[in-house]
Length: 412
Ligand code: FES
Image 1 (cartoon, helix red, strand yellow):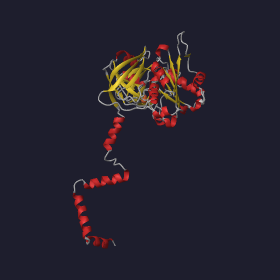
Image 2 (tube, protein in one colour):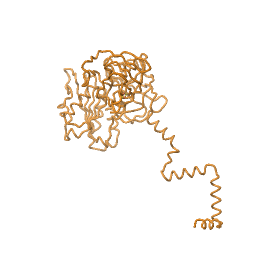
Image 3 (cartoon, helix red, strand yellow):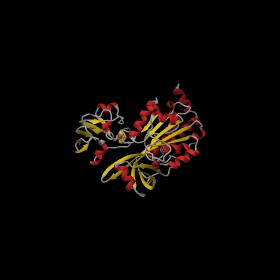
Image 4 (tube, protein in one colour):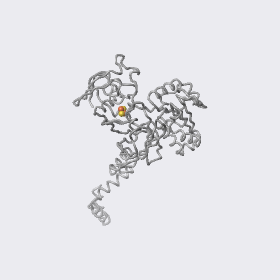
């Protein structure tokens, strides 16, 4: 049947003409590739094989691993806090979600280290990132940034990272942000983001209650700006709390106990239906998490932005009773060298002080970039270390929050 058909078409002058035209087209350079491209487009709507490089470039520009930034301005916020305004040097700053952080790489007295800081400016401001830095007593990096950095200084940073941001689908629009000290940085970004967001301004149900605690009255960061935002936007309510007030202070004081939180936040809706964001020093968010637990708020309704390793690991559950925080042990890096360190210093910090490094970003036990394998000896892993079961089983630790409690050998 097919043979007779072919014979019929070959004997047909019009068919012969069409066939020779097709043959000529196939001889044209690039025609077959164009046909394959067309076929791909019919099947998928997009030829991803053709765009492979472009897609990769777009992803890389949206999620760069490193940024080269310059300090364009240093803004004095309070006696203990400054905001560094960073602009891109060789690239446009990538977009971010309000609440995310960047890891700032520094070199202080020949020690290469880094610290993550939440971006305090809003995502709508594309020209710069604000990093709001509060002095930490004895803090290696915060004191350097506050005392030595001036406009014009340049740094490397990571791209924006982290999952501490509002997800309307899962978090809803009845929100409480509990901030302590410089924990206000991501809150400010989220609040300005909401103020600029038509969805939030059009949604009369959308609420954000900011509970902001500061040590002293003169240490309230962004006070005037936040007051102005609360005046202009119905979604925002702010409760200010001072933990070490002067006698003249007439506002709320003390620590955020469960009772106090209930009194402050309680409204027509049960607390258990709200979404909580907590950001502040480690002791602050641990305390707040405990108080929210007492109020029966489920863990899935509490987002916590960790701010570094625990300061006094010896006070945490699981710390070996026979190890004193002043004990000194030897850390050996396989095939590279060894050094001595105190047991209450995070492993990553002591490695960096001795010229070793591991990739890092969150420095709070979450991202797992700083994993090192412990070959011999013991380390204390606090609850901040979000270790995978297999990591635990095979001796890996997150060096940013791991504390060696005996002489150890590690592989990096
Ligand atoms: S740097 Fe993220 S887990 Fe250590």
